[in-house]
Image (cartoon, rainbow, N blue to C red; front, top):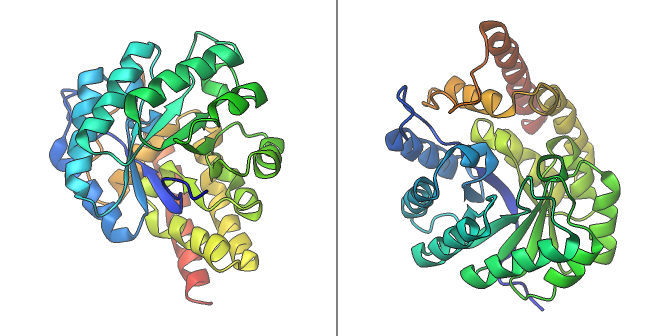
Amino acid sequence: MTPRMVLEGIYTPVITPFGADGSIDFDALADLVERLVAAGVHGLISGGSTGENYAETVEERLELARFITERADSRLPVIVGTGAMRTPDSVALAQGAREMGADAILLGTPPYSVPTEAENAANALEIDRAADLPVILYNYPGRMGVSMGREFLDIVSQSPNVIGIKESSGDVNRIHTLACDYPQIQMSCGMDDQALEFFAWGARSWICAGSNFLPEEHVALYEACAVRGDFATGRRIMTAMMPLMGVLEQGGKFIQCVKHGVETTGLRAGPMRPPLQGLNDGEKVELEAVIATLKTAVQAIVEGK
């Protein structure tokens, strides 16, 4: 059976630009959406953790999702994140996604509550019913406290809306499990330093925060591996990307790095909302050097040098 939505390409979980007073900078957000569309990414995600959803009200998240959906204007699919601690909040986000004409929802485990597999599945299906849109699951046990295991997947996969999963566990064995035992659920890379492994096991998409500021480079890896099947070139691009992955995944300042990365492109990203704080001067210099080296290396690879 053909899924309601095919996950293909690079999907950017869009940051939320803020002004100095903490208000949402919609002009900067509009500029970023236009930049991403022009750069060739394949979809946008509103309300992910990269967008600092945990520091925003449900009303703000709906306003952001509506703005991104309208700005994208059907040029790219828009996926709305529904992750929240309270099920009623997730349901409100799911209903809002349907009403605004979003293309799909991203559905994670409620953080902190540590539900059982059956409880988590029941929660997911309630959110699914509220949206009646294609659902991309989001497995991130490092943040949520529990994994979307076999019992969970066996239950939720019975819904025809559940078409994909963003896998962010970091456990390579999960890639094998999903590819071999749940082929009806499209697998999307959610752990940046394992992108090559995901593509090798059949994933056709990558949900990557780094594409906020390096969209062309992320698209280049997708095209090499998923489109052309050229894993020799893919390994070269991934090798060039690995220092960035180290900074993003291991430095403990993931969102701060992504937002400063956007600033290096000439766009406004603004500060983080509390409790997060920005990078110090030394961290900015280190990140900028990594970005510059990466861009030069990937450009040379793409040009066949």
